[in-house]
Image (cartoon, rainbow, N blue to C red; front, side):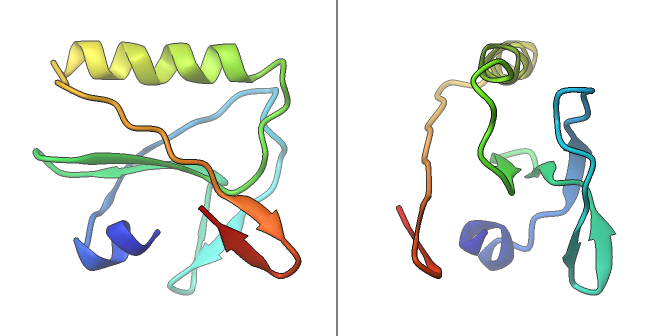
Amino acid sequence: MQLVKTMNLPVIGVFSSEDIPMCCTLHNEQLSYPARIYGNKKIVIFVCEFQLEDSVVPDMVEAIYDFAERHKSGMIYSVEGKRVSDKYVI
């Protein structure tokens, strides 16, 4: 989320699926989906506020890959945070 804040990226999309938990998060005093897409013409960042169930991972990967293909993205980087106590480590 630090990149999103630093680059002041707007939300450009969300992931919705029956397999994604029905919940919302609060960002900048506004409700938002737990799986969001931020970006501009130079960079796109996919954010997920929860750990994906194994059954959802293939569909999520396919959706990101399809997005990258449609927009002729040159690279895809994947970063995962793990919860350790009350902190996230990347």
